[in-house]
Amino acid sequence: MSIQIKICGLTNVEEAIACAEAGASAIGFIFYPPSPRFVNLGDARIIREALPSSVTPVGVFVDLPVEEVILTARKVGLKTVQLHGNESIFAVRVLQQEGLRVIKVLRSSGRQLLLEAEEYSLADCLLVEAGHGALPGGNGSTWLWSEAKPLAERMPYILAGGLTAKNISDALRDSGASAVDVSSGAECSPGRKDIQKVKDIISKVRDFTPTTKTGVIFP
View (spheres, rainbow, N blue to C red):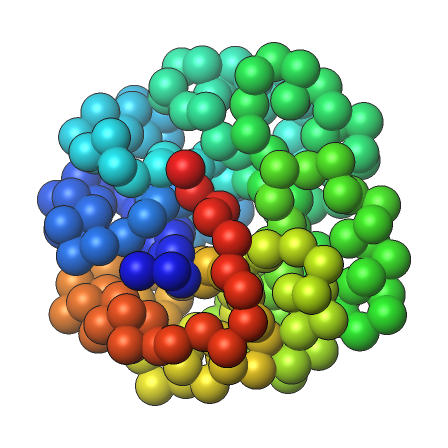
């Protein structure tokens, strides 16, 4: 499967295992207390230890001091972190020096997106989302995915924001993304995944034939 899939906001070990078995490339843990998908360190570690080695566990953080990000990653056993706030390129560099892979989230589009992508080019990967809600994250909001397509000509990136089984093929076609990040579009309630929705999304992605070159996001 050339397009990779990250299922984010897992709080339950059985659901995480089911997502992995369905073909998810990565599983996301949200360490942001205001989020309804927040997971504590103990539960995150249990889930991480239950995942097969073929699935990349990712810790999601919002404007947390780098020291706390590093400490959390070590306690849970994470090698990849996702920065979802206004973190600086300095924070990216410090985390990388600690041996962590860093995904930086950008919320702009068009020319501004390309400028920010250049600013954060040091990051291991970029994730582009709608970001229209009260909390950081896509908040289930769809957006004009084609506004991110120019980025695909420069680098592989992850697409997020309002993705469901019904629209994910259109989103991939319009955006040229190499991976997708799905949360609310695969849920029965915040933090709880509907495994049939997960399977439907993964099936749609597997059936999609990219028209542009894709890259590997999750090793």
